[in-house]
Image 1 (spheres, rainbow, N blue to C red):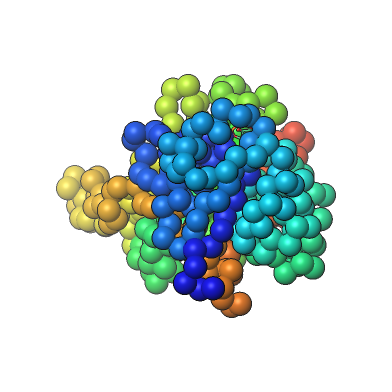
Image 2: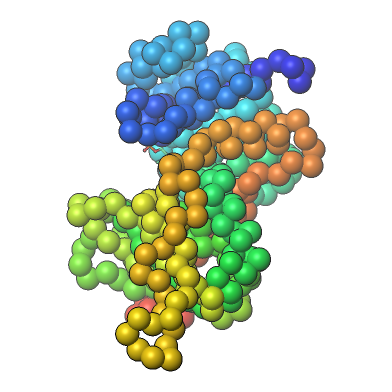
Length: 343
Ligand SMILES: NC(=O)c1ccc[n+]([C@@H]2O[C@H](COP(=O)([O-])OP(=O)(O)OC[C@H]3O[C@@H](n4cnc5c(N)ncnc54)[C@H](O)[C@@H]3O)[C@@H](O)[C@H]2O)c1
């Protein structure tokens, strides 16, 4: 069995599911379909979408991939070992429950985990009960360079972490969730989990979808570390920046996460007896986008074959991100009052 390619199905062949594969600028694979097609241990057997346009498009990747419009029929006929879910966010709960019911043991699920806390709790319960491994695609957890940075920060690359600020665009749930997840990923071992948050409305009406506003926030970790999360306007430019200040230097993650710059402490060129941070940082990673989808596929196949293998981003992680997002929103709508995170 181990030498045979793992049969995989994709539910939802839209942008992240399929179309990003044809974006000339993106590093490949850039979509779920591209990932399962390209990864040497898997075989994309079928895709399902209510929009039949994807039927023609998938043939450009692989002529043998079957097309369905009914998820249940696809799972019954193909009997995949792994399923990717990249449908709209309000369908994630239904699709994941269907896959669990059909006995799928490894599911790669696009964020967010579900539509609300109630659904998320139910999913966590079913995942545990059915021993299903659900990998949520908070993609920085699959980025080799961010994983390396996490370890380096834990080993004291810039000394004690003192302050963090971060910037995002286009909705707290849609994109802010990646900021929150990355902050928790980078600092959980250093600073503990998030203890409480303060949310703020943004008066500048930065662009986002109607049901997902841009809120700003201060999130406070158990050890006292504070990280600010601030929204900007996607109509001006895209941004995903993190400024991390330590007792021995500064790290800037910039270029939508592609570049990681290290700023050392130097003697002030202007004031005697003062030290400053360098103006130009040294890029400490390959500044190209990394093949995060390949790490994701690798994690999924490991989860299938190895009992001890665990998702690099669990449903529980995604659930905690959602609790934090809800608390920020609640605080922003209650005069920015302090809200304690209940785990
Ligand atoms: N991890 C990331 O970096 C990242 C990036 C972009 C999008 N996403 C997430 O991926 C998901 C999809 O986003 P998108 O931008 O690709 O959206 P999209 O609208 O381009 O694609 C969604 C597809 O799902 C299909 N679909 C919806 N309901 C269906 C159903 N019941 N059965 C079959 N097909 C169905 C739609 O027809 C559509 O083709 C969202 O949850 C989004 O948050 C994640």
